[in-house]
Amino acid sequence: MTGTPSASTVSSIVAMAVGLHRQAHLEEAEELYRRALGIAPDHVDALHFFGVLQHQRGDDQAAQDLIRAALRRAPDYVDARINLGNVLKGMARFEEAERSYRMALESRPDSADAHNNLACVLRGQGRVEEAIASFEQALGLAPEHTDALTNLGNALKFAGRFEESLTAYRRAVEVDPRHCEAHLSLGRALYSLGRLEEAEIVYGKWLEVEPDNPIAAHMYAACKGEQTLERCSDAFVQQSFDAFADSFDAVLTRLQYRVPELVSQAIEAAMPPPAGQWNVLDAGCGTGLCGPRLRPYARRLVGIDLSPGMIHKARALDLYEELQVRELTEFMQQQPGQFDLIIAADTLCYFGALLPVLQAAAAALSPEGTLVFTLERAEEESAAEGWRLNPHGRFSHTRPFVSAALGQAGLSVCDMRLETLRMEVHQPVEGLLVTARKRA
Image (cartoon, rainbow, N blue to C red; front, top):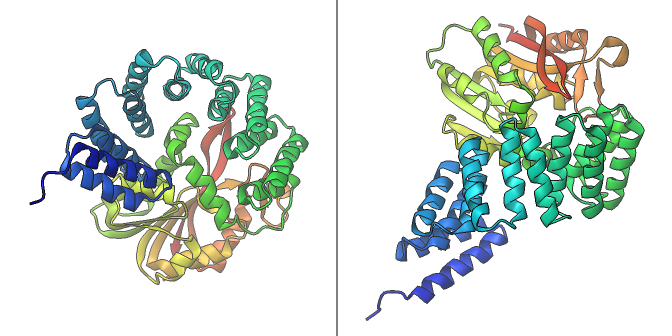
């Protein structure tokens, strides 16, 4: 007769799960975590690490519930306390995250990770000087902590301490020549200071270290002023936004990001009152920032994005009937007449030549269907082709070019207005808010 599995057996299952988890075999790890919890529902490591896995998948509510369950059973479990803070930070629940990190630091004051993560939530609350001090504490404990160096650079830049921010970024790149965010932050900081040649050198050196890195290649081309690219590569978009997924919403909040609000206003002006009556496509949905504004209009709400990390975040909102990791143009070409409304919020700025993607949108729209999108605006004298690739890596477009491309695609312009999309380095970023309709 088989007896109840021993504690050592359960611990062995959890150890196997953790090993698979560290190798990014998430499905196999989940199966083992569930098996362990089926035998021992109070096993704190299984609860904790299964919560971490759910956070990685974008299900922050499940992650929070599991890690809190571990902490109820083991209140002094410092790693679980730190990871609970990470989950809450990802949910932009900064005050709760701060409490969790501070409790962890009471038990482990020498945790550089906890100081770094605490600093991130302080910055998220606008407490920039406190954040800088906390990043510096992290670096006092771990001088080569590249995330803390990069985050310190970001905070110093926000505070207007530009030369100090460059020093922090350069140190991060020196410690880890493959650190993506540090290179991007350093290059963009130099660009914002008008030091474009230095930014080009930064991206060029990065490309020498990682010649197959699509982000390094794209940013180097952008800084060199190459105008032969007609769109950003799929690999560039996917890797950029996967790296950005966890901090995306918080960063856009700091940038006073207005695009979801502007898109909502354009829809209200162009469409009948919402009654859950339309098939709606959120094209380049990201973390789902537009989802709450689209949901009242949607009988069926579909979101697509190239970034699995972004899709995981959007899925946690439970707003979409369907979410897919897909390339936009190809997806829309395969959906003839399926959507009454398509929105592309800060999506088409990753395309230079707009005609192919606009033709695909027209094909996917129902008769007299509506397309709402935003673009960054280019001055006509700086964009001979009607669009240009900018040193920050995105495309901007002129009004006449956009109007002509819409007409060629079989779409009529209903409205095209100049709006402030966000703030960057305390300066407004101007863009076009466009509403178009498919010709009957």
